[in-house]
Amino acid sequence: MPMDFAYLAGSVARLSGVPVRAYRGGEELCRSFPVELPRDPMELCRAEVFAISEHVGYYASPLFHYYGVLNAGEFKLVVGPTAQIMADEQKLRELAFRLDVPREEVPAFTEGMNAIRRLPVETLLQMLCTFNYFLNGGEKLELSDLAIREEEQTLIKSGIEQRRTSRVYEEGAQAQAHNTLAIEEALMSIVRRGDAVALRRALASAPAIRGGTIAGDQLRQLRNTFIVTATLVSRAAIRGGMRQDDAFSLSDAYIQRVELLTSHSKIQNLQYNMLLEFTEQVDKLRRGRHATKLSLDVANYVRHHLSEPVSVEKMAEELYLSRPYLSSKFRQETGRTLTDFILQEKTEEARRLLRYSEKSLSAISAYLGFSSHAHFSRVFKKYAGLTPGEYREKHR
Image (cartoon, rainbow, N blue to C red; front, side, top):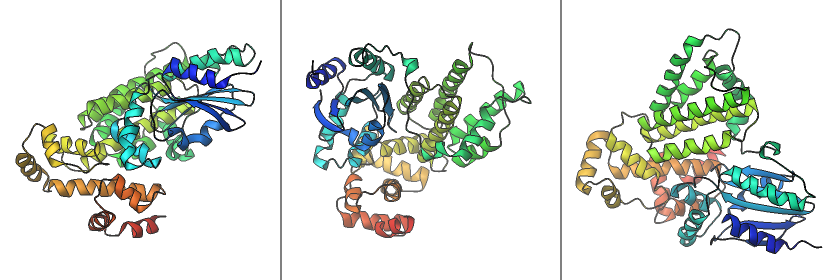
C-alpha cells in the first residue's frame, strides 16, 4: 500500500506545531507549515540535513535550532526548525538577512519563527522514533541509539584548540584537587572581564584539574561538570554586563546540546566553545572600557537593535530616562556621543559581514538600517578607514 506522505507531513505538523517537509529521491513532495514563513530557514542547511542517512537523526544549527530527520527508503521527512528557547529578535533578523528575506517581509518572518512551537530536541526525536517504527518495518529506536550530529565551529574543529581544551579538562595522574577553586575563579574572572585573549592563554597553559565526583559514571560526570560550568559562566557573564535573559537562554541552549553528546572529546570542545562565546559576548558589550551600568544598558540595547535604525528616543524610553539626560550622561561616562557609539557598533557588525558573508554591499547596508548605500559607505569609511568595498577586497 503506497504511503500518503502529504497526509503524514500534515499530521506531523499538526501534532508538533513545527514545519514539516517530505522528499523522495531529493525532490520535495510536499510541505506542511503551521506558521507563515516568507522563506524556509532550512535553505541555509539543506546540505547538512540531507547528509543525515540514518533512519532517525538531527541537525543543530548555529542558532541552536533543530531539524529532525526520518529516512525510510527513498523518502525523507524533515521536521524543523524548533528549539526549546527560540533565538532573540536580533538573531532572527540576522537569519532573515542570510536567507535574503525582503526587508518588508522580515517582520512576518520573525513573527512566524516565534510562532513555531518550542520543543526540546529529545521530544522531537522521540516523536520521529515513533513514526520510524511504522515506516521502517517495526524498528525500535531509543534516543541512546541515535547518531549525534552538531554544527561545529571552525575553532572547535581545530586540532590545536582540542589539545588546549584537554589540557584544562582531562584528569591527569599529577592533578591536585586543591587547585580546582583557584582555576575556576580565574576563568570566571576572565569571562566577567570579557577578555578572550586571556581566556585562550589560560586554557592553553592551565594545569590539569581533578573535580569532585558528582555522578556514578564517566559520561554523566562529564555532563554534570558541563552543567555546573554553564551555571557559573552564565552568572559571570551577567556580572560582566550581559542581560540575564540572554545569558540564561544561551546557557540553556548549551545544556540541551550537551545532554545529547556521548563523546568525551565533543563535550570538551563544546565546553571550550561555551566559555569562549560567553567571554566574547561580554567583550562586545564592554569593548575594553571601564563599564558603568548605563554604558552596559546602552550596549545591550544597541546589540539587540543592530539591524534597525536605532532610535535614541526609544532607547531612552526603554531605559526610563529622558533623551537629553541619556545623551549627556553617556557622553560624560564614556567620552563618546551616543551617535558615535551606535555607528561604531554598526561598523563593527558590517566588518564581520563583509569578511564572512557573500552578501552584497547594498544588502548589508539595508540590513544594518542605513538610509542609503552612500550613507553606509560614508559611515564605514569614517570608522574603518576604508570603504566597504576596499575593506572586503583587503580581507578576502
